[in-house]
Image (cartoon, rainbow, N blue to C red; front, side, top):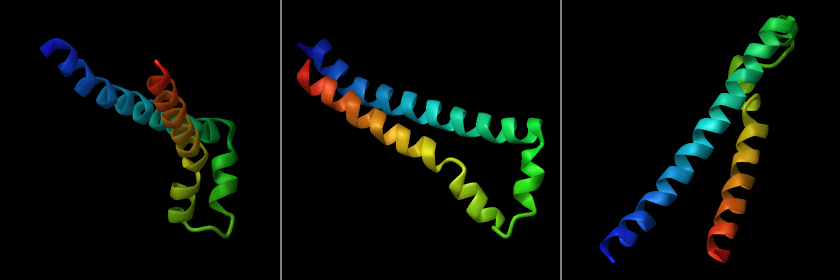
Length: 79
């Protein structure tokens, strides 16, 4: 019984870590891709602040991460 208790405490942490890492990697790869194709300079001359860019760029990936958490939690509750 003690081993199964440890798993129930570990699995949510592992799920959160994986979702966080995937979200961060996708957001950082999107910024690097913008720089590689040259559109980052075009974004920098638009009338948005750097804070708006930094907060707005990873927003879709954060929403995807929340959807992943909901999906994983639902599957976890069913299993």
